[in-house]
Image 1 (cartoon, rainbow, N blue to C red):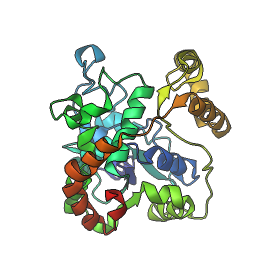
Image 2 (cartoon, one colour):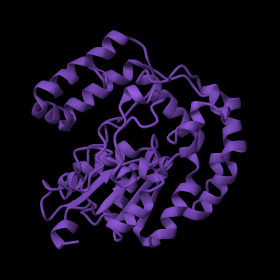
Image 3 (cartoon, helix red, strand yellow):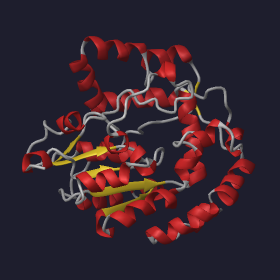
Image 4 (spheres, one colour):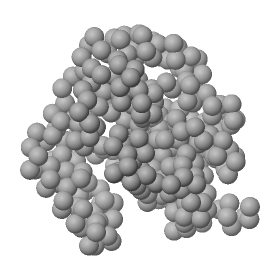
Length: 311
């Protein structure tokens, strides 16, 4: 591989877990002037290299619904061409946490890469995923109580129940990469002390840790849509933004990157979401029956006391 080709790979990867603060970390990284983040969030290259993208018509259960994925090496490297030579390059793909091919492909192409992961109590993460699917009107007729049915879609799709087996997924990275290349955060820390997390994040990727990003935006909120008409107007999948993206893609990109606009949009979207609490019996079953053994090993792997996750 030529030096020029090497320069078109990311210096760091944010690998997940989904619904654990990954979107927030991605945006804090993206705001830093010394960092260039791929404009396609979640290109999934290392998990899906060489695979054909399945159409939605051929995938009724949304098992392979990744129309934005970049599966060709040359196209993937083009994602980083706009970066300034002095900038650190990165991308975020939650599928790298659980994708079968991801760790070995990453090791093959960028063995010195830095790997960032953030984790949330598995039952909370799963319920947040449920609310996210509800927001997208993508529940496929299922309800949250079905998470306990191992024959259901909740166990068939890798990004639902199975994503929460953190030890199983992350231990593969510790086997392939030096421990110094892996930085693990907890969602709890991001909520209680975001300034410390952000400084550690910037220090880990070797950029100025004293840069202060805008942390006032609540990214990627989830819940049941209250008013579908308002959602079609300014929701995440609104017809207005779809039209702008198709007709004036440059304007759409500027809207996405404008923090003031994003802040106002997220406020409006949040007010239009209803977030019922998780059923406590289901939560207990998930925590103590389904995720318990994996979580015990996970806390040893990362050297953190996670006893509060068992309460």
